[in-house]
Length: 427
Image 1 (cartoon, helix red, strand yellow):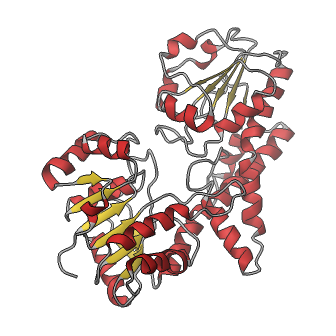
Image 2 (cartoon, rainbow, N blue to C red; image 1 turned 120 degrees about the vertical axis):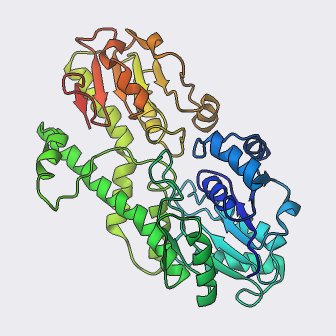
Image 3 (cartoon, one colour; image 1 turned 135 degrees about the vertical axis):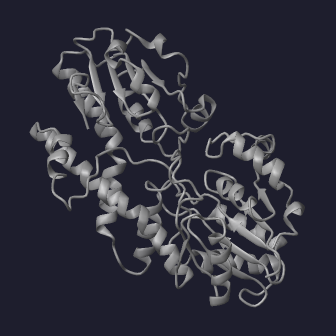
């Protein structure tokens, strides 16, 4: 190809950090359908907090990076990167509409010799069987004759300031050996730790989806152990610490599995496997078990309240945290919501406190009003407190001081990080 000019389509948790990084090496435009999102980014602020204001302003001021909703502003690009969400529907079936829509956008602007690279997590075959036919139909061009494609799965970890996009090793692939080399070269040029060039697009797609599926299965095993040991009156974390003294034990912890990756991506492979006559029992069981952990935590909290003689009906309960993980504002598929709704069967007096989450986003997505104010205002008010998310700010709070009766009230520690004398029960 001649000089590379990049357009990243989809400016969320994945697309924006990647676009910002590409802009340090190549002319780069970010494209998104959300005008308010684009306006905020062009003013130098990323509400997801994945890209700091300093880095974003540097990209804008010193590297010419800009974002737009105007398709005409991306027509002169020649290397398109698609980084849109891949959700599931209410029946946990893959919802490819965002990918189809992005592929239509690419089809309207792609020209002969151009390359489109997909980053969205999918089951093997989606790029070539679902996306590229849309590009062909809209553009009138022929795949692998007039335009070409690649796949490089995203590896963004929201809230992680150590494994940022420039430091991770990326898998790359291309629709021909020559295109694979070009795609690999473009990514390699901006990554500190380089790339792994997969032999085909399908292999690259499969590699991404098993990364998240493996974690889902492993966490499900720990959650199952937690249920077993809790029933036996044994502290799961003590068991894990003891087992971890063996050199080849893989140390993981039980927990809630939310977010846009681990709690969603396995369904893509589960559904596709069944098309080929394979029933992925382990993956399906892991998903079902992990999806039920929010209700389990709520019921364990109720059990702890009953054991201490705390009246559950109309109890005042505080949930600390609603994001799907610590130290980030991402509320996608958070299982804290399942805790909330299970407890609502017993009491309507539930307060959710989270200084990281956007109150407007939480209310819009889940219909829950949250508190983001001064934690001092929470002291002495509750019959039970659930530490749901391990935000750094929560480490500075005396959790038991939030109880109206520090001796008789209940503290449930989902994350297993509180001192033993602080928590009455933990996952």
